[in-house]
Length: 68
Image 1 (cartoon, rainbow, N blue to C red):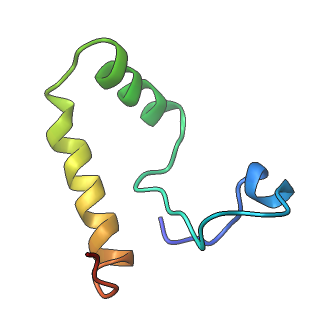
Image 2: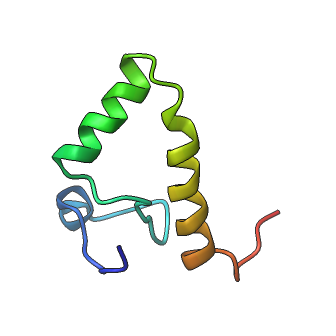
């Protein structure tokens, strides 16, 4: 987390509708499996773990901005 890179889609796009986008996790094979368990196989107990990832990313990247 913290490395600034463009994804393939963003690199190829000429126009975007947002200034930046960040991932709360590294989307590797393990994370793909965890997301699949949560989204498609009913492992709702993973919600708390994902909320911790989101909270950490928010605090690191967006807390100073302030949202309405």
